[in-house]
Length: 233
Ligand code: SF4
Picture 1 (cartoon, rainbow, N blue to C red):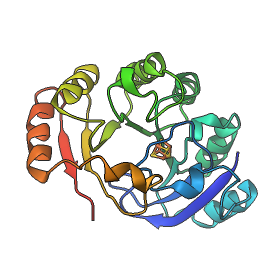
Picture 2 (cartoon, protein in one colour; picture 1 turned 45 degrees about the vertical axis):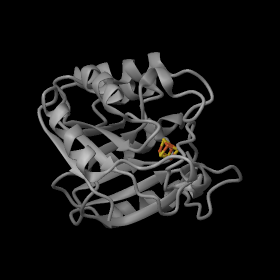
Picture 3 (tube, protein in one colour; picture 1 turned 45 degrees about the horizontal axis):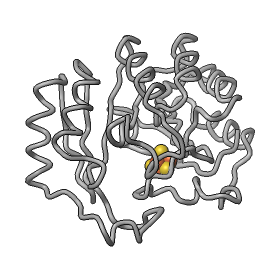
């Protein structure tokens, strides 16, 4: 597992808990609005961390932090992710996984082994339309498998969508909310144009207005148990 970032204390990444955030390096998507270019670009992480160094740090935080959030990049690309999380759980931390949902087999094995306490999955567009702007290959089947596994897991969970054209409009929102019907929480995130992976991309496409975001929220609330807007700061 390659770790490319560590936030030693976060109040916002695990709902209601104080946690550290571990950022794994590498991703199989190419979201133009990604704010973690240093974790996604080829050539290795800008600031690599040894796994033992991170585990050593976490050991010093036992009793002081509630949780560890494993984010990325895409954590589920790393075959030794279960081993890492097992060690984190042995220290007594709650574990939240942030995932793009592209690796359902890994996700399910983590959930089946009881290694996760909270799962957050991004749904970036109509799952049938990830290629070519978000992914180099079709991903619909994997994304749907991950959604279904999360919905049936019994774990606290959330789905999240960054709202920007050309990925989201009312028809796409309908498709996504139909897919996640009954979800505990759906977060509609305002697009933040600062420091993106592909800033030129947004010369052509416009963001989505706060008014439209509010309309999206009303639509989504018909299908999910709770919907929130997360505005860019
Ligand atoms: S936003 Fe997430 S899924 Fe998209 S490229 Fe960045 S790290 Fe990968």
